[in-house]
Image (cartoon, rainbow, N blue to C red; front, side):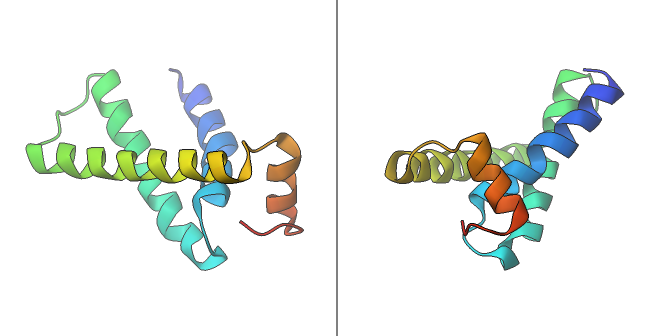
Length: 96
């Protein structure tokens, strides 16, 4: 993935994931940090950076599992998000 593509992912997907996964607006910063950390770890592995230690791998796995579980459960309960849903979340006209 190029630096441009990485930047696009961060600018395009990170805010959407943060908005969708945060149960309250006050939780968004912490979730954004966790998602960014997961993405950076993935990038290190894919692009040949330093290999994480066992504790980092376990922590990342647990965080990824939790986010996947939370996102899928929400989608099953409330329906999968649409572009309109994310627009409403970004504009503040909808609550998570």
